[in-house]
Amino acid sequence: RSDTEREIEPILGVSLDSKDRQEVLKMTMGFITQALLIGRQARNTLKIIVTPNPEIVYRAMLDEAYSKVLNKADLNIMDGIGLVWAKKFLKLENKTKNPLMLSLEAIVCAWDVLFNSTNERYPGRMLFEDLIIEAKTRGLKVYLLGGEGETAEKVTQKLSSRYKDLKIEYSSGPWLNLQGEPVDKAQEEIENKAIVKINKFRPDLLFVAFGP
Image (cartoon, rainbow, N blue to C red; front, side):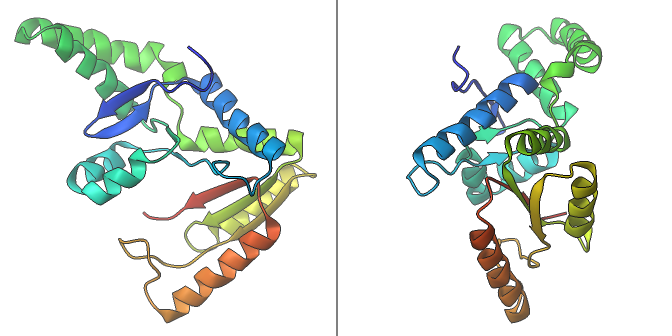
């Protein structure tokens, strides 16, 4: 299996990637290296990575448009032990239909997930931290968009203090409705200012944190 080949695990209609921490990080940095080599303005250099948790996958099951957005991502990283457990349990269902055997296998599966599946659990927070270190090491530009209140500003200050040479900017961004649109004219103005700032900064990594 190559570093860029996706191994998909469908759960409730969402195509999730079954890659461990090192594989995800290597694939992500491969995206960035390729974009830098051929130029950011070239086609197909923009890559989208999302980190669905069980709540997001459940909502996608109820919202076809939302599911389509998730499935267009270049990487869908399982964020949460529940999805790792679901992946393993769904594989068990394909092996046996005997209720007793399935129950016993499920117990073994749950034990394995809790105590032996550290590499399969790669929450978005951990991916963020790993990419920040890579950005500092490689001199990449980072932009934080979203976060409630002053979250983006405080995280930027903390990261700038921890990594002195890190190139980082931020915007809190607008309040959005369920369709991803600014809720009013004032928020539209905030959105436009954020877009101008992002385009001027031209980040290599754009982290987006909207929603609850």
